[in-house]
Amino acid sequence: MNPPSDKSRGVALAYAIMLGPFGAHRFYAGKIGTGVLMACTLGGMGLWYLYDVILVASGGFTDVEGRRISQWDAEESHHASVGGASQEVLDELYALRTEVNELAERLDFTERLLADPNRHGRESPPNP
Image 1 (cartoon, one colour):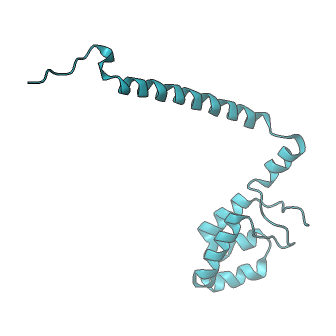
Image 2 (image 1 turned 30 degrees about the horizontal axis):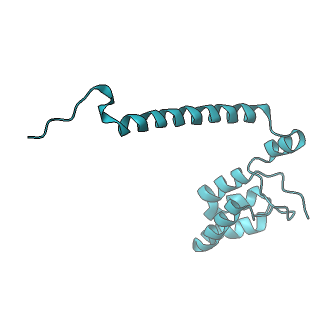
Image 3 (image 1 turned 180 degrees about the vertical axis):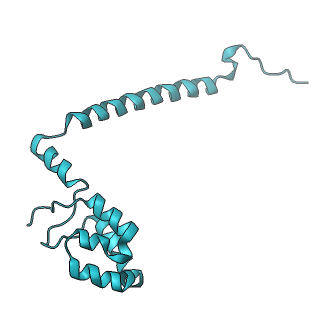
């Protein structure tokens, strides 16, 4: 099996969505011939364009050498696969967990307040 392409799937998807009818993502992948053909037909009147957007988004699009453009940021994923998750990613994960825990505590507190409306000394109005 071929290794993944050194091209970024995120960049290819951005090109496919914004300039897909003109074949920009195909030029990016090195597929010059089909890029020109796609530009001349305006993305196969939209059908080829739509097919390619789905293909790039799903990770099935290949570069000129037949390698899949499957990694969102090829350079970062190469570094991550060599040394594991980077410290920046771990720090961000910790911060997100902290925020989620704080939100869970606030939600729990709010639910308790809403469940007992008489808690603050407010009495229900007397029935006439």
